[in-house]
Amino acid sequence: MRRNFCMVFTALFLLAAAALFAGCGAEKSAKTEQGASFAVIQDDMGREVKLSKKPERIVALSASFLEPLHAVGGDVVGRPDSKTKMPDYAKDKASVGEVYQIDVEKVLACQPDLVLINKGMNEKLISTLEANNVPSIVIDMRSYEDVKREIKTFAQITGEKEKGDALIHEMDAKIEGVLARVPQEKKRVAILHSTSQGLSVQLDGSIAGSIAKALGWENVAAGMTPLEKNPDAAPYSMETLVEQNPEIIFVTSMGKMDEIKKNMEKTIAESPAWQSIPAIKQGKLYYLPQDLFLLSPGLHYPEAFEMMAKLIYPEVFQ
Image (tube, rainbow, N blue to C red; front, side, top):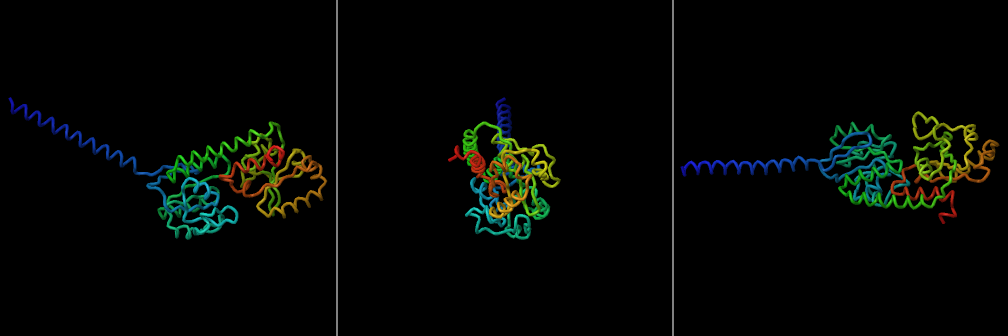
């Protein structure tokens, strides 16, 4: 009987030991599977991008990505050329060409383990990057909400979630401070974009349009049919502008500010229709700098909010 007891005891011990080792093995397997990816990111093309480890060699294809990425602990080995939005840390990094003409061979020469692609501009490079086993994340960074979303994405890439959250909180607080100081009164505004080909009208989806809307003003172009190749702009018509009767007109342009002003003043001086608009009669024509209102302001969105508000209410924002 004692022998039977020993046999039963031995069998139970072996079963317990097997279960213990099996449990340890299952736990280890679960941890391995869980740790297989450093981050899983949903990009702005709806793609799910899995990063097996923290990227160490990042190439950014828009200068607008450089500052917010660096603010959450990121660095780059390659970046596009830019005369206006190049932070100091990126000036000596390898150039991969103009933002509109990225050289994919230069990108690959950087031996990247991640490429940040500017939506609407560089998606055609995705297939080449995939063929070279280089992951890419498509970024759309225009509106303030876009910027906050991308800061979270960059913080995922760098593993610095707390830095991202703190940065967003700081920006929100600054913008809320601006909005609190703006008088609660309706303003009818028009936002024109000047190019060498002529004028177009900016809609609410544009950077300037979204800021004006957030400030509580009415964009007289809201509801107009957008251009086929630009959903944030609509065709310009002098007749329509006169009919819309804006109190304030903002002008954006990628050109030199002195030349833009000179050309606009000449156009207005030669046009009775222009001179009939209330905004022109009252001298409420304002020019917005490209760094804040055409190129994504990124971390400087609070400055863009304050600048637009200050143009209309200089006495409030002294």
